[in-house]
Length: 95
Image (cartoon, one colour):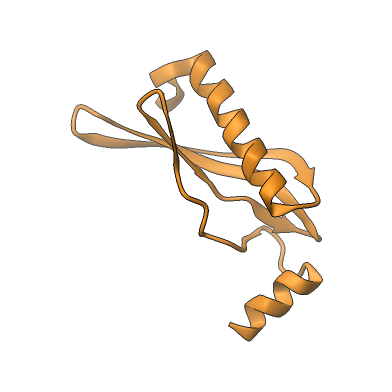
């Protein structure tokens, strides 16, 4: 717990997801889970898009090059980019 605090404070850890308390966003029957990663003191846009199709849970994991100074900004951008992917690809995102 203390290590996690110092890691957040000083931007330590490369590619680590520092917070898992971002509620999922539901969009057009898809579930968007934001998982921004702290890399060298910046937050990288990353997350998952999930959907249940024919009783099977499908998952698409994505990481973008976008780096932002704040975690909340990265969460917002993750959701925005996921919505664009869903709009453009629909269920084909899982192929």
